[in-house]
Amino acid sequence: MHATMAVFNACATACRWSFSAPPSGRRVKRRPWIDWIHTSRDQGALVRGYTKWDDQPASPVAAAKLCCAPTGSPNTAPRGPTYVNLDAEIQEMKLAEEVAPIDGKRYMPEIESAAPAAVIAKAAELLRNAKTPVILAGRVSRSVEAWNARVALAERLAPASSRTRRSRVVPDRSPLHAGAPGGTVLAQEAQDAIRNADVIMTSTGLTSPAASRMSAR
Image (cartoon, rainbow, N blue to C red; front, side, top):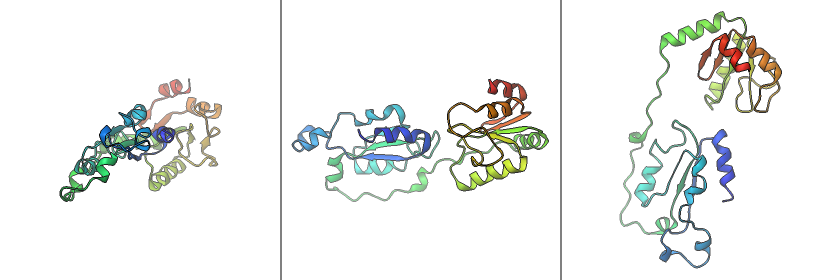
C-alpha cells in the first residue's frame, strides 16, 4: 500500500513492471500473524484503476509466460505500468519438474507500421513551406536518438515550440522554446505562437490554421 502512489506516478512518466510477493492465497497455508496482515483477497485491486493490466499467475510456468506475453508488457501499446502478484506459496514450493525454457521470439510484439510515404512527403512539404510553424510534441519516444532528432528538426525549421508539463520539444533554455516551462496551461507566449501559426506539428500529425485558432482557445 505504501507503493501505490509510485505506481500511479509511473502512469505518466514510465513503463514498468511492478511485482509483489503476497503470502499464500490459501488461508490454511498462511503462517501466524505476519502472513495474515500482509494479505488481501484481491491485491491487484489496489492499483487496478491506474495500471494498464494486472494478474496473479497460479504456477511457475504461468508466471514465466506471463512476463513474456506482449499483451501484458508495459512496453507494448498502449504503454503503461503493469502489476503482477507472485504468490509466496508458489515461490517457496518445490518444482515437481523442471520448467522448460521459453522461446522469447514467440512473444515478440508486432512491428509497428510507419505512415504511408505519400503522407510523410506531404507533411514534409507543409513544414518546408511554412512561415510560422509551431511544434507541439508529446512523449512520442523515450530514446535519446529520438530526442536529438526532434531538436535537430526544430532547429532546421526554426519554429516556436511550445510545451506543457508533459511535453517538450527542445531544451527549456533554447530560444525556440515558447513560454515558460511547467504547468498544465500554455503560457501566453505559447498561445500567441499557436494563434499565429500557419502549420502546427503535433505527435499525431499536422493541423490547419483553423485548428490553430481552436487550440489557442
